[in-house]
Length: 394
Image (cartoon, rainbow, N blue to C red):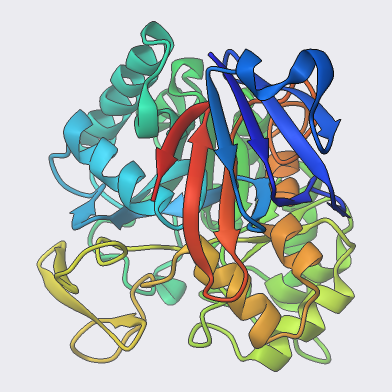
């Protein structure tokens, strides 16, 4: 399948370019061409030609923390159809790569999700055009090895000490990209080291660790911080805490929920200025309500409700979000006054580096996977998307 994408304002992942077209062949980016495309590259030589009429064309968004979408939560007896429903829901907002995220649960649920992800990745590999399901690139286990003092919506009865079975489950390479959020003071540094040596991405979250404990964890392979500021020790003058260590360290990444509820815009701006450029990435922490008409859903034995963009329990505890990725990009521009280029990098290029896919995702370059989105900058609405070259008009 040969496709030509023309007439857009192209963002390559690093810069905006005008008067450019992009050619796709067999699910990958073949070339960035000068417009008008002519000669041997005339439109008659393409299977599909997409006229994008001034839309912004950019790398697809990468979200490493997606608890649910389209009315589906990963927590529960989900199947491949449910995973596809989630992927379709988030694709409508520009997400072309995601890590379905299991909120702390028991070992049976963890085994079920692991088996499901293996089945998903096998199906994608077996099918040349797996459609939206191809957005699933692995799995994120958020817990259950967290600190009850910073548990948030995670169920305290489920939080526990580490065990050998979970270590083996996390380290299984058949799960694709594996991300584990844990509290370093609960697991200890050797557990982090074992995960890191097995190729697992390890993030600190829901943690009451002090600054020194985080510095030690970084030395043992801690790679990032899950939803910076939320559910972790803050930065104080005499104790920098998790936040201080995260902002000081130049090698690690931080996930940010930019929805106007989780973190004050001023704090987000301060953090982005303080952290090394390229190490802040957008995450949604999305729940089942994203892309769903019904804004109420269940987690554990709780009924949660999203209203006016805010997702919470009946007692007012924040519980994930009703945020989507194009919405997060928009809020970076409108709330934080970031340049659109940087907001887009935080949604694509930077998370691509975090998950080790910087040679395949996050940029519009020849040889990269054809994961692309086209959106209207005025309405912030998605018009087209491609996942592995598979096209969908929204």
